[in-house]
Image 1 (cartoon, rainbow, N blue to C red):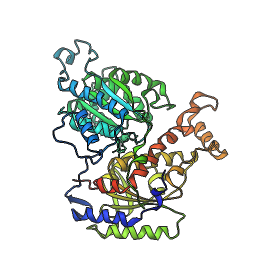
Image 2: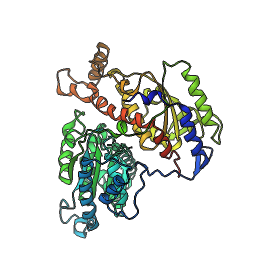
Image 3: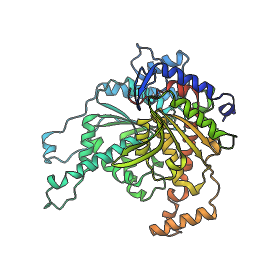
Image 4: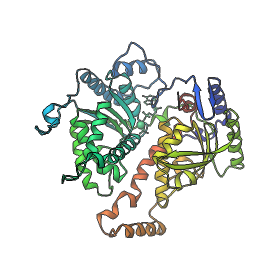
Length: 468
Ligand SMILES: Nc1ncnc2c1ncn2[C@@H]1O[C@H](COP(=O)(O)OP(=O)(O)OP(=O)(O)O)[C@@H](O)[C@H]1O
Ligand SMILES: [Mg+2]
C-alpha cells in the first residue's frame, strides 16, 4: 500500500468534497432530497457513449476515452459478456405448462442459456464489468443485487410463506412443506436475469437452502451472472456440513460458464488518485478530539440535532447513541463485538450517508466473530456507497493478524468444539469457523475496499444519499 494513503492529504480535502456535495442537496431530519452526483450504484463514475449499446462497445469506448486502462484479461471477459448479451436478446424463459403445473409431467430441467460466474482476486474489475453488462442488457426483468442482500430477502420470503402454512397446508399429507420452491418461483417471476455481486457462502443456513433454491430458479429459466472472489469449488470451503452443499456447486457449474479474471491487478491500489485523511491511527495524539471536530463539522451541515436514534431491524431495536441526520458516530465495540449482522449494517446503510467508526483494534483469530462482522460491515457500507471515517490501531493491511493459533485461541476453539460435540481429531475440527481461514481470505477484500473508501474519488463520486 502506498504511503500517500495515510499522510499526504488531510481532512480539508474531504471537507471540500462535503461542501460541494452539500451545495447540491438538502437534508431534512435524516432523509434527503437531492440532486445526485453522477454515480451509478456499484459502478465507477464512467461517462459512456450513448451510441454504444453492448458491453463490448461500451467497454471499448470507455477505454478509448482514457477513463479505464486497457486490460486484455478484462477484454476477454467482456467478449463473453457480450456473447451472453446477444444470446439473451433472443431468449424468453418458457412459461410453466398446464400439465407440469398439475404435476402430470415431471418437471424437466430447462435448457436455457448458460449464465456466467466470474471470479478473481480483489479489485480486478469484476463488479465493474458485471454492472456494465447489467446496465446495457435489454432484458426488462433483470435484477442486480449483492448476494448478502439477496439471501436476506430469501429468508424473509421463506419466513412470510411459512406464516401461511397452517391455512394452506393439508396436515394429512405425509410430505413436509417446502417453502423454498414457491419463493424461487416468486423471485423468477419478478426477474429472470439475476446478477449477483459477491457470490459467497459463509452461513450454514444459506448453505442448506441453496441447492433447492437455485435448482428451482434454474428450472424457471433464470439466468445467473455472478461475481465472486472464489471459484465455485471453493465456495463454503471447510464450512460446517459442507457435504449437503456440494451438489449445489455441480448445479451451478452446469448452469454457468465459469470464468477467471486473473490479471493480478488490484486497481484500487494501482490507479486510484491520491487519498486523504479519513482513516486515523489511534496512536496519533489528540485523535479522538480531531474526529470529534469532524463530527461537529459534518453535523453542522445536517438539518438535525445530535441525538441517539433507534432503528428497527427485523422487529428488534438497534440503539445508536450518537447520530445527527445522516451521520452516525459509533465504535467497533458497538458494531462488531455486539451480535449484529448483515441486516443491521444494511439498515444503517439506508439511514446514514457517513459513518464514523472508532477504536478498530488489531484482530487475531481470537476475535474471529468480530472480524467477520467487521468484514461484513465494510462490504455493506462499500456496496451502499456510505462514507467511512475510521480510527484504528493499525493501518488496514495490519488489522488482521494471521499468526499461528495461540494457547488462548486454542482454548476458546476447544470450548466451542466441546459445546458442539466435535472431536479434536475429526474433519469437522478443521471447519473454517475454527481455523479463521474464511476471515483471513475475506480480509484481502476489506483492505482493498478500506483503501478505496479513503480516496477523494470515492467520497466525491459515491452518492451518499440513500433516498435519491
Ligand atoms: N481497467 C481499469 N482501469 C482503471 N480502473 C479500473 C479498471 N478496472 C477496474 N477499475 C476500478 O477499480 C476499482 C475496483 O473495481 P471493482 O470494484 O470492479 O473490483 P472487484 O474485482 O469487484 O473487487 P472486489 O473483489 O473487492 O469486489 C473500481 O473503482 C473500478 O472502477
Ligand atoms: Mg466486486
